[in-house]
Image: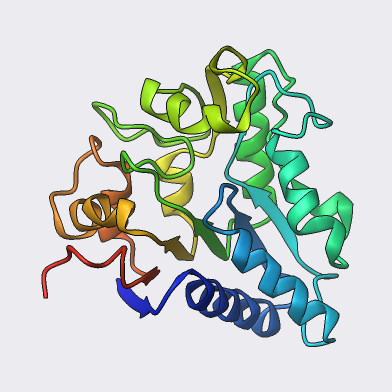
Length: 243
């Protein structure tokens, strides 16, 4: 695991975008695994700037997103489909048919999870998977649990995650209670993993996830076992790691 310390969120976003850009330049038809949430927004903005400057071409890539709320349609401004189009897809020359997000409107969980796993396999797997880090250690929507879920699955969101997400909805009652998410095994099969994290409020979980025990109670801790992980984090997020 490589840990790159940055000055602040802007610096973190720039360095993370540089790593993604290097992946695209090295392999123009690569498969990118993408994440949502506040952490990667700056990274996406920087990638858009590179595209607008003529330094980056997205036309050959394919994308697969980590997760999607179950029960939200694509037009809902809180769906991750909507998020990705707002922050990246509609701003660069990615081919729409090569962008993939789990279908939150598929009521049959087994069917959708099987479809998504087969889709990822058909693309040859993920070359670089971008991740954020939840306050409880979740990656994607893999919440603290008794075991590591291997494959794409439907998850019941924890109260802490619902609480964290309620600021995006009119009321807590509007927050979806379930989501489709890539499993830990799916994430771990990515050839490279890039995790971005910032802020003092993440310092405790950064220390626990990357310098503590590997346990499904801290889902991100499994990344200690991955052969190629880069964590790009600002100084505040790294303030409690062993030195």
